[in-house]
Image (cartoon, rainbow, N blue to C red):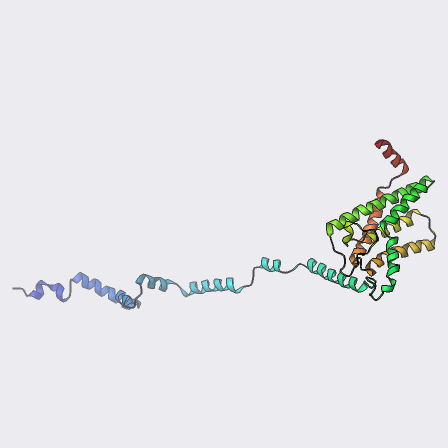
Amino acid sequence: MPSPKAKNPGRSGGSPGLSGSSYEFFSSTKQTGRSSPSHLQRQGSDPTTARLRASESPSRRRGSNSSTGSASGQGPPEEDGIRLNPSLIRVSLSSLLAIDLWLSKRLGVCACEDSSWGSVRPLMKLIEVSGHGIPWLAGAAYCLYKSDSAAGQEVMLNLLMGLLLDLILVGFVKAVVRRRRPAHNQMDMFATFSVDRYSFPSGHATRAAMCGRFLLAHLVLAAPLRVLVFLWVGLVGFSRVLLGRHNVTDVLFGFWMGYCQYKLVEMLWISPQTLQGLLGLSA
């Protein structure tokens, strides 16, 4: 009669297949150095998570860390750096503007009666009136009316047209730029208009430059008178800064603009024949 041990061999060692597979599983774990699933469960970790963590190579972790560090450790991109840096032109313009304001304030020695050169202020205001538009317009219209020669009428007519062109262009530029007059200026000018509260460009400087160039080109003047015309143009521009009416750049740009206006008058020169033709067409 067979013994119970022979009838139930699975109680003692289990079935041969199971024991063999069990032996092979534990032997493979010993060879590879991995822990058993039961051991992983006792530590409270998931076998799948452990295998995924173990499969991450150090080189991949180093690569991700280096890429993250390079992205976070570097400064702003090159385009942002260029955008943040101010341009050279803007810095130059800001520096020139600061120098212009400082120099204009230092030269405004006749801006008021209490200034260092306040006693010269009446003389500077007389020079200011000599470059005003109303006396020049009235004088050109009177000379045109009293002139007997055709050449004189032609010259006075074009001077009158140049003065009107100066008023239009200067008023337009002032209305566009809208630069305020210096803070130390006193608004006690003779016969001002709405656009005269703006500073850029100097209308006196443009008018003096244009009229001075016009007189030197179309009037026969002796050498002393030509020198006086040059001095008058310079004094009119310089008086604008001394009185605190304008900044230095307003006067310099006004001189250049007045010279350009003279060139424009020469290009649009109106002869008596042209005027008669225009009057005939209008009639």
